[in-house]
Image (tube, rainbow, N blue to C red):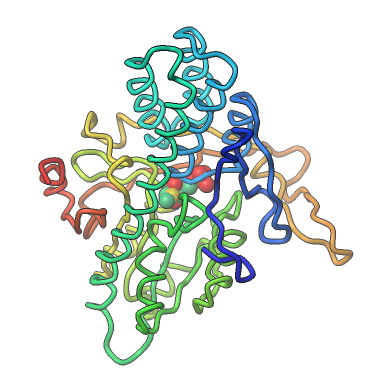
Length: 356
Ligand code: MRU
């Protein structure tokens, strides 16, 4: 993705020094800042504080965390310790556990003398795979958008940020939107602001603007109203974990959009690379740990002051408590299709993806 005409991925290694650079997503959209990550502990903090976030990027970041650990110590004990630290950083996105396990499996069968180089090679492969998967999601999702195109711009609602910033590049839910825009199909995106951390307002809107895609930021509560008035042609969201039965766990508030879309007979798609599918579980409501984040994220909001500084202000009474579940589960019955790198699947056909 281009930022001010320069191409960036969200994360990249320095092959000489073997540290990693990330874009600090807590500073966007008002400041574009790069941060150097040089240890597994620093990567755990970056994931937990959401300097990097979004399921596919969390996975690749965790894999880089393992590689950083191997810079210091390639023993089995060091590998196990790094894996444990990373697994505890955020629980809901299955990509994290998937990536850590892939690195552990790969490195364990190497002699310790080869683990340092091996780790950096394997994570580079994973990052490139993520980019290719997202490009393929874009191609398959483009067909879904084309089906909704008549003579007016296709109106697409999205929630949270499942764009370039949530992956290594291209994005998942936004990949088909970029593909449509680049193919000359007029699209307009309704961007849910996505309280409490406002990933829609601050990240999705920013990256759509960088790419020149027409969009409008709306409050989280506006989507149902727009659907009732014929102003939404389709919904595309990302996901942090999808069950083998097609239940979709994504940013809190996704379920309400799926309910409204179902009521209005508007297609509702989740766009996910296959590492986001948890083949071990069937029931999204019972089997997925929903991350409970700090209630302070609800009590405080970040913005740009008239003086140009980025500051936090409190938006609830000092005496009030807040609750901050970070994700919810949309049952498969509300989902029209899962857009993957291998094609678009009805939720009840998702298991056939395993054999493709
Ligand atoms: O808490 P976040 O910002 O990591 O949550 C991100 C989301 O919910 C995204 O929609 C999801 O990870 C899909 S990202 C391609």
